[in-house]
Image 1 (cartoon, rainbow, N blue to C red):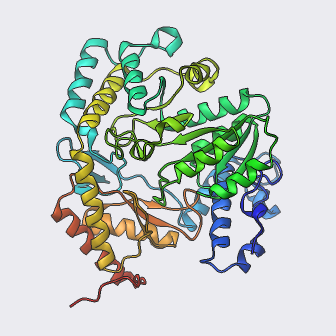
Image 2: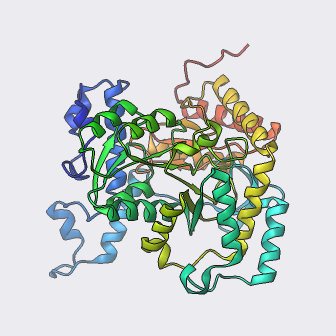
Length: 481
């Protein structure tokens, strides 16, 4: 069995270039807790090193990247050879040319070459369809007519619009915090906030969940602070690491509420208990939960009555709220601190006023309406039940994310292509480095506006392709009558 140190590595001791030993992983049963923990740590380290100097290549590969008789690198050949390698591994990403159909979500027009056809989207992060809601569109049109297209500058230089101020007030109220701060995306809000907090607090140590998103990892790495990975959703492992630190050292625990690929949910209360015990700040990413959970859409923390226990709650405007942008909420002091020191906030153009107006309208609506959330959860349950009855292997979780486990990148891409071309269903394949190798999947995200007919067609299509591909069924499959 792997040691705890192997499963929750301090980055400064074992950087991304030194992941857990492959032989150690091979000795563990694939389904064992240790193997799963190692895979999560490896995936975390892989995401940590997603932007890094290229690995050392054999001489033959280096020679192929240079002009004959020259020491000058052939850049184009290098780029093409690396892209060819992605294609061979089944990891090359192809973007579907989609045109969303306002008022007919989740249906869209797919353009492929000179042809086009109607398809049903089953992997959108516009979870509640708020991107087409009349109140959102009306607010955006009114702001566009009133203020024009752009913000006109950074927030510091003529770019703070009244709509930004109003939106930050809505967000602070949503999470029961004193203040909020807007960013241009959820990625940027994580990168800038974590990077700034950890860098500016002298001697800060960041404790990062092994399943954290790349934006959190990049922000933590950018800070150059000491970083420790604790086992995914494991308060005991977090407690062990915090116990090893000097009590006087500033500490920041960073984790998510709903993890976007597996769909599992963090034990927020237990993690807060451990953090409080050791005097650590808590930073919760609610990107895949805001709008969807809680009586007013404040996320898992609101649903469980825990918002007041988090130092900072981070979220996005680009998923359940249906627009674009990111934010943090917290005390007036911590938000002002990030506003004053974060380069990712200071040196970028502010969100357009129309976007801020649309986001505020979406948040206000979802604070008052639970209809979208109820229909959403009903469709999630229907999809899960239908696919499970056909023996399609799903990753069990308590959230709205339905991962269909394929576990092979080439097959995963082929199934996605067939669903689109043969059945008019768009589900994007999820491969490495987004998920660990061997856990490739199709990530289904049902929406409130998928009909019973849409669900039935999805289930039939998966059943047909699964049979034609000769893929194994889940043991939970119901035997046909």
